[in-house]
Amino acid sequence: MEFGAHLPLMDFGGHPYTFDHLVEYTTTAAELGFDALSANDHLVFPAPWLDGPSALASVIGYSGSMRLATTVALPGVRGPVPLAKTLGAIDRLSGGRVMVGVGPGSSPLDYDAVGLDFDDRWARLDESVNALRSLWRAGTQPFKGRFYTTEGVELDPHPVHPEGPPIWIGSWGSDVGLRRVARLADGWLASAYNTTPALFADAWTKLCDLLPEYGKDPATFPNSVATMWCYITDNRREADRVMTERIVPLIHRPEEMLRERLPVGPAELFAEKLSEFAHAGVQHVFIWPVADEARQLELFWATVRPLLVKPS
Image (cartoon, rainbow, N blue to C red; front, side):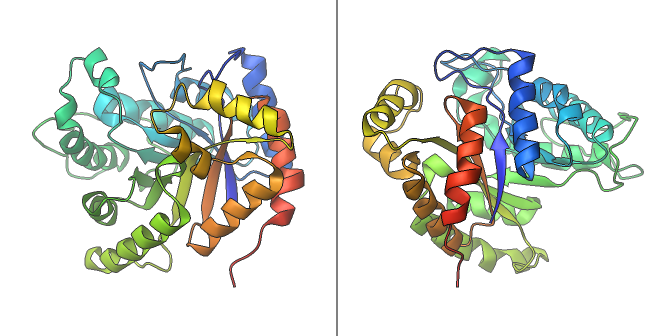
């Protein structure tokens, strides 16, 4: 199992939102050995949310050799042409290190903000994936769909690799979502607060059964679990405070579910949860500390990773 770190874009309380804060976090992740750095995407959210692509671009020079990922970006909200231009530039400036995770988005607020119908989000996502590939691959046929066309659009300079960045699709594990991943994606992004090791294992089995239908090899198809909000502490009172004051008010899930699914508490609890995910077939996890972010990355590396039980 490998590990990435979400940039601290969302305000769980007392967030400084400074460039120095992002640099400290990114430098810490790179020096510890995290293999990826990611940014999530919302235009409008109940809590302050720093723009993801802008934040990711701002720390390219401090990110070492880490992959730079979106987990996920919203092409239906931003539009595939603007998103392709932005992420193509980040890929070019980082030397080809971008991995593009995309999804429809779960908040109607983002769609309302740009005057789009939230009910069209899935159809827009399907078209967007094809449009992004058309825009990034020189010499390919333009994409023409109901919502988008790339006809007559040439986005120079292109990304570093001729085929463009890999495109992963976020899905919580529904049958329709998994088929979309198998049909369109280069990888699958699951959501930590929307799954469990048992649910993931079941969905991964279904996805692996679907992949050969689309000429893809289950043995080489990648997956990751993202949005794993976390906080490491041996102090039960502190863990309860972080859960009830920082996480529960902002994440629209029952408190019991969040306590079950998110690692807030001792390192041993975190390691146990990650070991269960590893046994379920998870290859990669993006963690997201909700407070004292850089220090939490250090604690994770020093106290959680050594406890992980590798799958037999």
